[in-house]
Length: 233
Length: 233
DNA sequence: TGTCTGACCAATTTTCAAACCTGGTCATAC
DNA sequence: GTATGACCAGGTTTGAAAATTGGTCAGACA
Image (cartoon, rainbow over all chains, first blue to last red; front, side):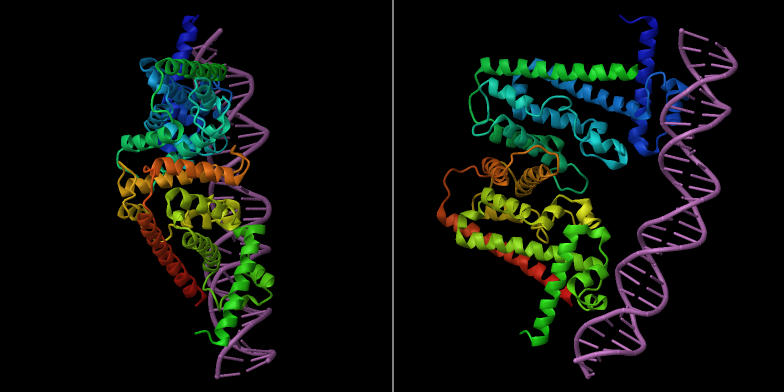
């Protein structure tokens, strides 16, 4: 599928994304010029426009690649252990996954300094990119694990509120427990108590849920890969 | 204690605060001049400076008065029914209390349009003004109602995260259940499950807690009233 | 004598045009 | 066919002048 040319194009694109990502963290979106990125990647400025149509789409690709890396981590974890599909495990893994990726961290926290105007519209999208908000609660419901007393929309609302609240505490100067793992555990505990009523989980139901979540994340990943490929050209 | 003069001064100050508050909601902090406020209050511009030293301290007073009104509502509720002191009841009442007061709502949501630079530093202070963050969890602990497995600091962190998450969903364009009461109930449910482990509450302990909370809020109210009086002159 | 006011001024904010910069193109080199 | 950097239109920054306004206070008023 890859001609030698395509493959070396692909490698070059990766180098450009590396360069852009590194500068993003060092200088922030606002101060970076396309020439900076070209110099950092050791190529000419025009070459970047062989891969992306605009500056903005280049940087969107940087973020999409980060996003894919997080989704891949979640998928690996889900395949290793279906219990990862439980809300409290999912959110714990996603929370730490975002915190460990400086660019996603900056994106989720809408860090104006790093992300400039990219922070605005794109907002918090790391995982919920293209899917309806209640896709995950919908899967829970179908697996007979819906939180009691809440519609799927309400579950999505609750989940979103709690998770975004814990993220908002990651902003500077907010007091919080020292270790990120501890914060993740507290988040997980909260999610479990609020959204996982049943003490016991039927392994049958659980693997059904895990498969659904895997399919959902694969669909998201495919869509992002599509957008990335399109951006590449 | 009030000379006739003091009392009419007080009434005039209230009129000025009314005028400033109304303009704040109509035009936003940035566009309001002191002359606008004076005109709206039907007095001369210099008169405002008989009450406040600076424009900023005038508007801070507007917000402090709103804050006091919320605290008074909480205190009335606590005196009517000590169960109000339970975390899920406290947060439900505070949540709705903020949403029903447009200025506090704008402050908590850091609405740049309405609050201008006031949104920045002052941040979310409606209740937690002058107290250590973990004052309330500390009261819970002393009443033997501490959430299991969490230190007071961690309880404060958890409570803050969840509440601020539900507030952040009050921003425009965030999907959420239609009725504010429903959202408040969902918030209350989450708080209860996460921070109130015990099914039964000893009425003795409860009224002890309620008294502690009342004293705490009275202290906050007194401090705010002090700052207000000082601002008045 | 004490209270209130608006003319006044320093300081900040807004405006606007010139200078500068940079995203994106494309003729040319390889 | 691929890569490049000179080039330019459009956008941004700069800075100085104009306009506004926070805060003062001399005087009007009661």
